[in-house]
Length: 331
Image (cartoon, rainbow, N blue to C red; front, side, top):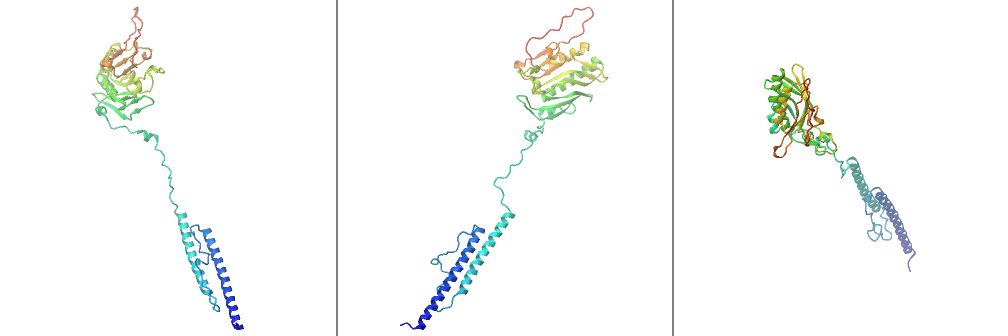
């Protein structure tokens, strides 16, 4: 028979084991609760410590009569808490750094579009061979950007012709200045230098100082008729004139019947020799009050010169009325 003392020893050992088991359950419950809180505050903490006592026992069961290993349990608990706190602090630091220095957006906003003026290229191109010939001792001309539209109104090698310089250094201004293709501007400058200015000084007795222009570049149809062919004005290849002003202040209208017929005859003949189209009084109603000049290219270098130099009828004469010209012409 088992002695009473042995029975008491067994009971005491069982009580000790029961107390140790209760402490282990309490400790595990506290650790699981801490890891649950950690997982809520830090999703990166994925795996909690195993709760199955068969997978990783925290303590070994004490032999009957042995003291409860509470210090070992507390040490393991503190070690786990320390690691958890260390990892939590590291994660908080990473979060703090993430908030302070956010990652750049994958879709950065696009830069604003360039102004229209810069995309179109408002800077004039380098001077052409024609512009190089228009030296300051021949004309005051400034290069302009190419004309691109609207529609088919296009022109390259464009200049603004402001004045023609005569051989004596005097200037004949164009008022207003004309926007023309350089070949047209060059033809106008040489015509004024070699024909218009000398004729004015010789025939009219005073040098020319201003050419009164009526139109240069303009995007429009011929005679402003909707649906008609484009005018040479729409290609900066035409110039309309009204007359000129002399140094003594005299105004000469090229379509005025009272103006010097001799002077107008010289101007007409020289214009028809220089330009491919010359239209004036007698060509159509659109050119009864101005002279149209252009350099349109036609097959066979065909030219049109339709300008009747009219004069006031003499007293008692029976002069026939102005005759219209029938064939279609470029204007």
